[in-house]
Length: 187
Image (cartoon, one colour):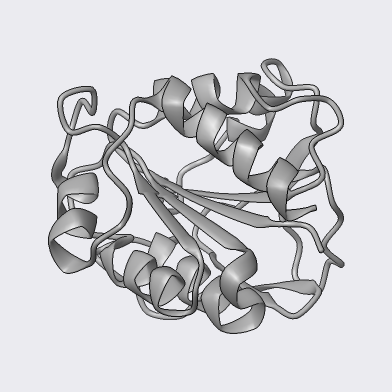
């Protein structure tokens, strides 16, 4: 079974995200889901990722069936959650002052996919993703956080570290290597 990769980014998270996405091989079989704290503002994140990746990127659509080897981005002003096999979008209350927020994605992924989930918290200025990383590791998944010295805004990775015990923080290039190796082993 393929892995489910969930990634949280906020302030300062775009560059490390692009470095990770660039490193994913063309035959990468995992499904990748990204939440960026964008609020209701327009987003060109799928376009940016498409220009740096061999994997297709697009906004997730409510009820969309999840495919392997694709990147799904939470659309502006919508939480993205995962049911078993499908994307679920909603305009529920803001979490950590954000919609979309990472915790709904991470927690729903952990509940639906258990040990198949890899959660990644990159640069950001609040604590979003910390509860989600705890849910992922609590369900047997892998939790990764960006190195605090590399993160432009280390508050999100630091909160994940304080709230749970994911693996040792890694630089973006090391995170990419770790998930490629992890997904190769779990196929």
